[in-house]
Length: 217
Image 1 (cartoon, rainbow, N blue to C red):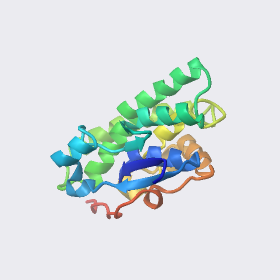
Image 2: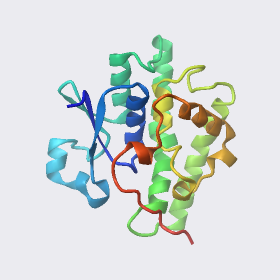
Image 3: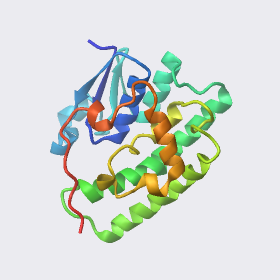
Image 4: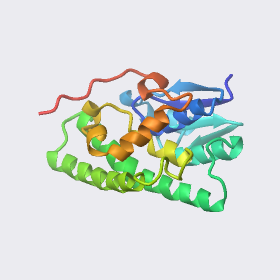
């Protein structure tokens, strides 16, 4: 059995954050497919066994079951030393960006993508417009920050970068965003991450079936 087992599926950018870290850190890990699209995480037995919150990622490691990507990334960095912020100030700064990511940068972008492309029924255009506007505001913050640094904390990648990278590699026809055109600093940053040993596309790294996004009006 691998040292780390990650419960995940290919549409989950939050799971991708952890999978990408594990791969780039060269750790011994294996995916455990979670059939989210067919309701697996809503099953009471799955929740009682795996995660009462009904979410992925879930990491099995050292007899633990860890949930929430920020907690998992922090645990792995503390344990392995890889991509770990160095010093108290850097650790606090990493967590500042991880919390911003979870609350705004990933949150609104991922919600917009799901409602636009994968929700069972079309979403009210006003709701989509609100989510896109919130995502654009969060992306503008990161775009400005990356104008002056190669990675989120400076010259080297850390867990803060892996956190923010969760959804930036999904295709434009899913997300409804053209990052290369509209956010050149974010695009340059994601290309720097792409150059890391172990980088892989979410649809190559995580298990599950790729689903065509809903056709747009």
